[in-house]
Image (cartoon, rainbow, N blue to C red; front, side, top):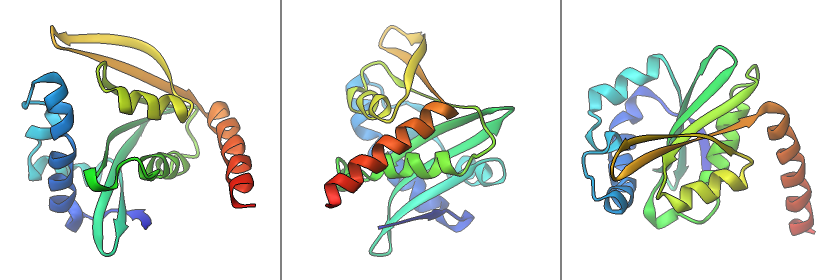
Length: 169
């Protein structure tokens, strides 16, 4: 698997993957009108001028993606998706590390997910993110905002490198 910068030409494949990956989220909330499911190809394409979009590719097929942009000293991360057949293999974590590494001048990283998205919440917390606010959207959905400071990202990376070295010994 290879993680690289996505191109404008990848827009349709990433959008298709996003819509597939978010089906499970829609089922959790019984809401198939979530923004990731209603995003259009034009919406997706327009993001290439204002966001960094990464893709994970395996055997020539896009199996994951994440996007982010910088606003002042904060990197806003969104739409982390991994193909259902490839989930729980560390791809989401690798995409997150790559997107964090793409924004060296920021002091903090921020993202959000739904309150019932337990798998995503566990992943983000495992990566060093901490909840800093919650925002109700409607009676079925509350957005949970998480952040990680740059210093925490470096500390987490050092711990991850040590664990990886031990695993490879």
